[in-house]
Length: 299
Image (tube, rainbow, N blue to C red):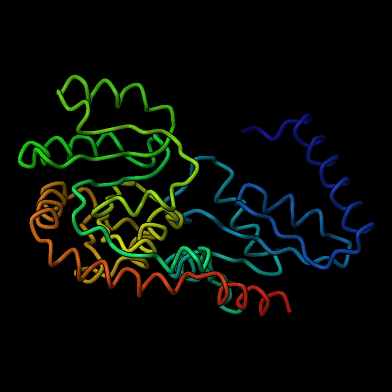
């Protein structure tokens, strides 16, 4: 990540091209989406009337896949016109750890389509569990498979489906086959119409190491699914109300995760109550009120 002469030249050329677009199109606001692009957006608006909003899509406390990320955030705190974050926890981090002025930072959730949050009915007879996400280190599906292996032998008529693609797929497939769980734990890849598929399941489980704001949980919630997740720093705690529409588990507490999943399998009435609550809570994330928040910010 050395800032070489070649990198500097590429950056300079990009800034020049973006600034030309801003002037030609007479644009009022440029939104730099993703912290690695914050400096590019800010420098591109220098000397023109366009304001720069920096839109964080990660957990600022826990996501540092690139060395440049935290430097970018600190630069945005000093130079951006506004910073937008996805969660209340992320907003607190910016204010308390990065010394961001409260009037400079706004929290706005990612939305779901209103039609998704008007799900038909909950499938109380389903004996399938769903998990969704890229098959990568972040999503921690290796641990999820280990958890499933501890549970499914006690419930021979239940199965667990995982939707997503990624670099861990081959290793996960081997793990499942070696444990003798082919057909019980299913890697189903990417699908086009996942919204409708949620309705085939009894509940949803997430084992991610970190998240910005997990859209898959909101989609499951809008489809009336009870939710179970580790209580990682950002995301799940603003979607799951523990004991009401699902369970939040202390991070990496595998034993409790197993207990909670077994409890939901066993307790049909609890699943029904949580399903009704999930539909109610999902309305916080529908498109229209979130559009109004963006309109207010832009005005």
